[in-house]
Length: 382
Image (cartoon, rainbow, N blue to C red; front, side, top):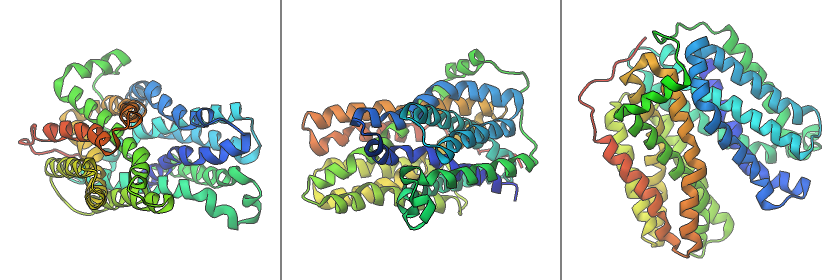
């Protein structure tokens, strides 16, 4: 029961992921250029880049639960503005940035606090399940604007119709986390930003942060380029979207939920995930339609559990520094803004399916990283 408020917080992390799909409706409403509309997801990534390490330090100093509450409070305010008023685009971007900051704090505190509320040996499993629930939240948040068309007063709000729902859920999570009782693992000494960054001097942590950077970048590459790649095989846009990013993220969510329901060594699961992701990328690189479909399926399974397994394995190396490590790894989410730029350059240069060499290289690194260590059994705290 102690994990339920944390799982709800993970579900609501997906609201920030909906800003990308929602940008098309906002673009039409405000008559924006494509570049201006893409500022919505960009502001979310920028918030992760700026506030992840400070968020980790804050969590270590005032407690992970308090940072969760701060993140939920910021998110509640951020979604309340478009829920109750019709903002200008500038004000909306300010709200999106605030939502990004709040979601950064949820990620930074939510991943390590799951260890504090998990029974012994259940951390990796619960974290995988939480990431699966986050995936459901991302998909639901993206679909909600089209679903609310059946609800009269929400439909009348046009692109803003989803925000009252977001507001109610954020406020509910804020209350549930506030009344939650948890005994947190704490650092021996209050950390600073400098001491957090000094963890990168330890090769194990530096390699893990780079792994998260490349993983998130590869995932955004899949989300961005699967549809046009399949459309290049002659598929209609809707079918390319269904068999590309929709299928990929559906399988990814399924894989996380499965990992959250079984007991498997995190190291073993990490290796298997990295191998499947690498094979999936190679099949997409082949340029053969049937192989590409298989690549989407295997890629979805491979991508599913990189984050929870790599995160939990890394935190178990030094659990008393969990908040700082979480801040560093959440900072690496900025890879989602940078790695796809490389793949985009290859696509623009007409490399077509060969451009998937970018996620292949990312997963080649992750496979090598997964083969490192694993002899020491992961410890867990009840």
